[in-house]
Image (tube, rainbow, N blue to C red; front, side, top):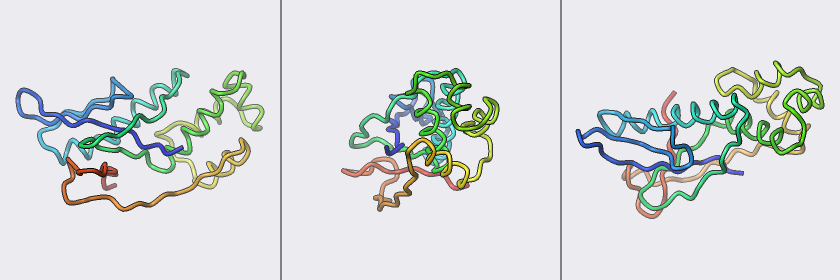
Length: 161
């Protein structure tokens, strides 16, 4: 599954730029300009997903990115963590039970899937393999001519780190 979520870009009444995620109503960025709003969009998306994971709620699949919307991609590590979390959620076991089936404690599983915790890509790939999945990186061309309104192709946003 590609973990690229659509985001709308609007202007507030006072002229600021708002980025909102239809799949995550609580994820919103308001910034003084487009570049700052776009740079903060990934952080807002990660925070919304991380909150759902900590409360053990389901994570919505990405909606359709329509013309004029941003397509905000999760970083590869976050996408792997979400895939592991979603696999656990699809089972009829508790988080503890799922963690035990992987040979780890609940705390270790929570750390592994914590979107803010550093975890090696190798550990994520190993865990994905244990649940019958694999991580595939995808690099694609984007239209960089107009960052906000990319014509027919949505723009994949990854802020500089």
